[in-house]
Image 1 (cartoon, rainbow, N blue to C red):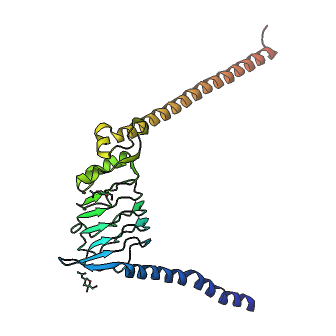
Image 2: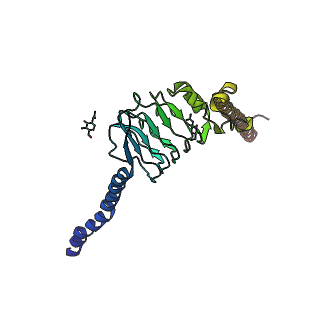
Length: 255
Ligand SMILES: *[C@@H]1O[C@H](CO)[C@@H](O)[C@H](O)[C@H]1NC(C)=O
Ligand SMILES: *[C@@H]1O[C@H](CO)[C@@H](O)[C@H](O)[C@H]1NC(C)=O
């Protein structure tokens, strides 16, 4: 009993210390040191230019001044952007996120930038698709070059919903597509959708799948019907034979 109490009282505390606090401390150190490592410069026309280039950052540093007009986060190790990453930077005019490892942008990650941002550099990342929800309201000139864009029906549907300057989309070059055999790879997305309807192939595929499914169901029904009829015939024949047999054994039957 005493031993059990001892275990209950003593064991949880070291494990808690092991798991939560050093990790939290490391996170805190990372966020604090990273903003201190950035260079801040007063811009000529007011506002701040903050350079955090090449600092191996894995997240957007906390504590960025709300007077920031230009923010350079290029050449870091950012792999995703969380919602509200820049929501306090209401004067931000230019945001450079090029040369990172961004493969996903959470919806709302550019929230708060719609009225101020004019230039957004997302080149040299790992983006595969353009989500209109992520870029909604951003009437920016975006550099979208050098990403492994995957051109499919979803991308085609996104084009008319995007607020970004249409010239930005000319640089969205398909690295993979749903039409690899048609030589679409290496073409700009906007050129591709002029010649092919990427959603048509999806529709055609789903039509084929529906046809095949219906055919399978139909043939199963037919074979079941055949089987049922044959079974019934066999049973009827057996009944008939039994009746004949009874008839033949009937002693009162006149011969
Ligand atoms: C900008 O930041 C300063 C100091 O951090 C704060 O006092 C001020 O209220 C902020 N301005 C706005 C409009 O949020
Ligand atoms: C986009 O970035 C590439 C590489 O950094 C550069 O060569 C190109 O000029 C940029 N395009 C625009 C529109 O800024």
